[in-house]
Amino acid sequence: MPTSRRRFVAAAGAALLSGCSGTDEPDRTATVTPVEVPRSAGDVLSAVESVPVPSVPPAPVVSAAHRRAVVGHVDEGIRAAEAALAAADDVALADVESLEDSAAPFETCRSHLRAYGTEPTRRRFRRVARAFLASPAVQLLPTAAVGEAVLERAGDTRQAARRATAELAEPTPPEAADIWRSVESLRLETTNAAGYIGTAFDPSAPPRDDAVSERTGRHIEALASLEAPRRPNGRAPPSRVRTVLSTVRSRRSAVLAAADPTDPETARRLELLLDAVRIRGQLEAFDAAAAATFARLDAEEGFPTERLMPEKRAAVDRVRALAEAAPLPRHLGQLAEDMVTYGDRLEPDRGTDPVATAHFMYVAAGAYVDRSLERGQRLAAALDPGTGG
Image (cartoon, rainbow, N blue to C red; front, side):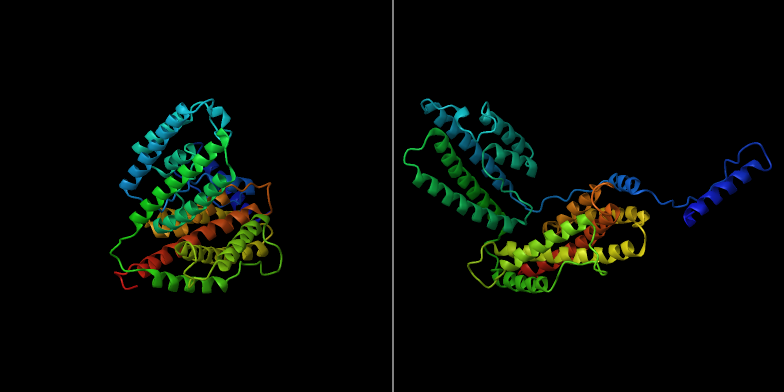
């Protein structure tokens, strides 16, 4: 019988004997110190899943003027589309195969637009964008990097519209609708890019190019020296951990392949910098998780389930701290929320060592938040000309 189980039985027996001696009435003031009893994998995974994970707010910041511009632009586009449809001969919305709801697309978009105007949340913006057949511009990026990404996407949209127009001498109604959608998407993307960049930059501030290049080079160099952790004894990590580590290896390779911060033609320079900081933090966090998890996994027959709940609560505390941080650290550490919820989704009968995998993800999430908070603060100081950082 395991030691902890023997202690539990002995304590229960002692309590029973003391209650039967001296009086027929039970002693209601007596207490027994609870003893930690190992739980099954299924029990402990269900228990940690019940601990709620706070949401990290999106990082991009846009002005009220930008929101009004988006609403006005989409409303103008709806009116133009309705007028064009009314003036067309023998054209029905059902002919446009790409429309998900051919019965009332304009009213659906107006409904989303009204909701967005009342409460301009990120989710509602995405609904407006989907209803209008334009890709959403709000991504989990700091505001300036969003501007870069939107400008690049707008350029791609423009090229696609030009190619489609050149190839179609007399487009059919569905083809014409697709071209119109591309052009309107381009207009909406351009509106968004102007809004994000206008919100993110102070035109009177000194250039940040040198600071961006210097920091990018520093983080790329550090990233190139890192590798995803491996299990010390050569055995394979749990299957879900292998998947996670394979993904971060691929992301590392993609960032290194795109990295030449001194090249003035490099697109999305801020995004390259932030990618390097994020992937570096992930590799370091996974290394810390491997050190805390693999040793326990190798030392015992089955991972100790009692370690899971404390690590889940610690991870939740760190995510809560991240949710209250400034936009840049929130963006850098956003993946921590997904790390915790990934651990919550594990099941005892799927994959190898689900308890160890959940432990790995919880430890990694906490370590990742700590690095994101620290580096976000340093990066903000380095890119702020007023601080001399």
